[in-house]
Amino acid sequence: MTTDPTPCDLLVTADLIMTLDAAGRIVKHGAIAVTDRTIVDIGPAEELRARWTPAKTIDGKGRIAMAGLVNVHNHTPLMITRGMIEDIGFAPMYTPGIPQGHWLDADDAYALSALGHYELLRAGCTTVMDFYRYPSSCARAAAELGVRAVIAGRVHDAEPGSLADGKHSYSTAIGQASLKENAELIATWNGHDNGRIRCDWAPHAPDTCSDDLLREVKKLADAHGGNVHTHLSQLPAEIEAVKARTGLTPPQLMDKLGLLNDRLIAAHCIHMDRADIELCGKSKMTVAHAPIGNAKGGRIAPIMELMEAGAHIALCTDTFSGDMIEAMRWAISMQRINRQGNVLDPRTVLDWGTQAGANALGLGEQVGSLEVGKRADIVLLDNRSPSLAPMVDGYGVLVHSASGHDVDTVIVDGRVVLAGGKLTLADGDAIVANAQAVAGKLWQRAGREAIG
Ligand SMILES: [Zn+2]
Image (cartoon, rainbow, N blue to C red; front, side, top):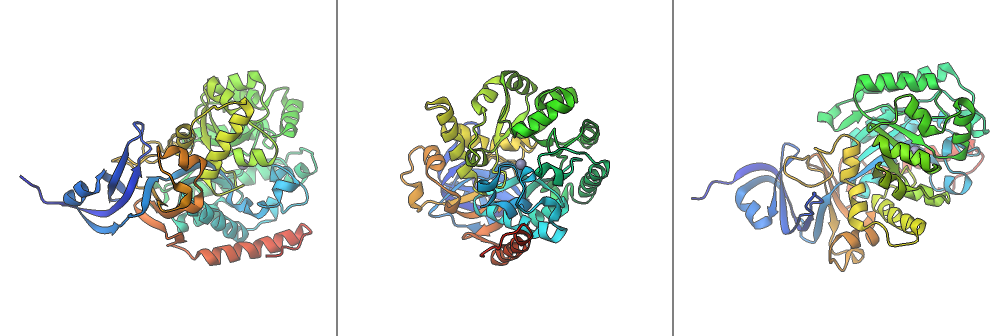
């Protein structure tokens, strides 16, 4: 007995489907059926064509389908410093001679955020955690371009101007303003578009937040129920400032204040001694590993040690690139340099860039792999790209050889947001031109004429 095919919204076919599920299922000549933003079937295309009558079909001949990439730490408005900060300093907030965050207005932040989200989508990133000043501008850009995002404001009470001069002075007014900005963000954007945009709390770092402010953030984040995002052990200056203020290392301070736990996603974790590593590992926190920025700053984070101690590892670009495939390649290469050996494997770092990131963001049941019941966040790569040949086990060539430029189509929540490398919901050329205009204005204020 045969049953009539069932209607579905979308059928995506592909030469190869790399589901990135726990079993590592790969389907040749496969298809994915999507209804109501959700994957309802995955299998051989011939079988799915018999089972489903789609309203729309994406013919993925010459394409490889894989789960969308997940970037767990980014600051899209900091696109303003990209291509310059690498040669001037390390962390923009601590670096003089560059456009400062407090020079931006909401429109500048929106223009730069749109550029950041465009670049991420263009390179196959479907989920990003993004936090900075004017977080509502970041949320608006993410919502408009169609990316899945967790957004937060940059909470701190250290005076940004003094940080760039190597000093830490704290202002209650600055702290309260940043708390208010984040509370407004949550009230307006949390849960937007059926949960595609979610909001969290992000105290900038243990040195740029006083103990009182960190306590306040903990209370607010506990009531809110999401993750806490921060920078941890990023710079010697941070560690010195925290030690001078509290007598503790940054992880010890976060632990004392009840913030070092499995809800913390902490970027960098570079300058840690054995005791810090053990403490972070025991807490089951997630390290947002930023290998591209670390490498450009001449730093290697003890990622293997943190992983072996029990910490979760996920990947991020931290605005130094929009290309999560590049981040995976840097991650594996840097740890091999650090350990002077062939440690890690492509499947592990691919997991850091997908499912582990989704798990860290509390989205592990929704995204991170292509499985029935999950949201349809699908990336189609060009199977005719010379960078993707030869395809043997699939994982090695993806991590060691592919790049974001091999991405052709991106689907988020069952909606095509990038097709043939072009945004479908916004004008990519206008986004680049607007961001360049903002950069020209702000770099001029910093004393440099932009040539673009
Ligand atoms: Zn960061």
